[in-house]
Image (cartoon, rainbow, N blue to C red; front, side):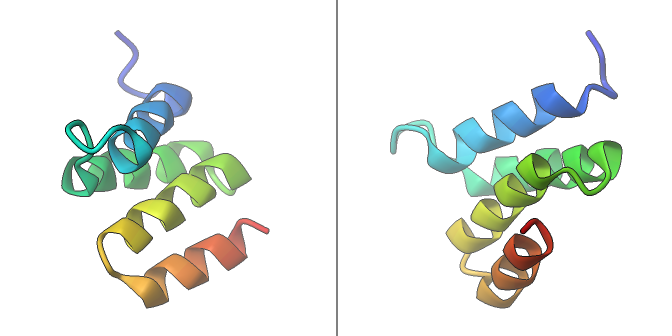
Amino acid sequence: LWPDFALARNNLAWAYATGPKEFQSPEKALPLALKAVELGGTNHNELNTLGVVYYRLGQLTNAILTLEAGI
């Protein structure tokens, strides 16, 4: 209903990144997490989710940089 609602995008991205194996899809999580960061600015919750998504995708450098930025 609200395409610019960062929290909803972030929560769905988190579910795709960390949910049960049969639901996990970091590929689906990435655009949601990126948009959540864009909408939420430097909110540490969105950055944490994006960092975990990068980790799940094997993009370790991006994961480290993003997680550190959220600290």
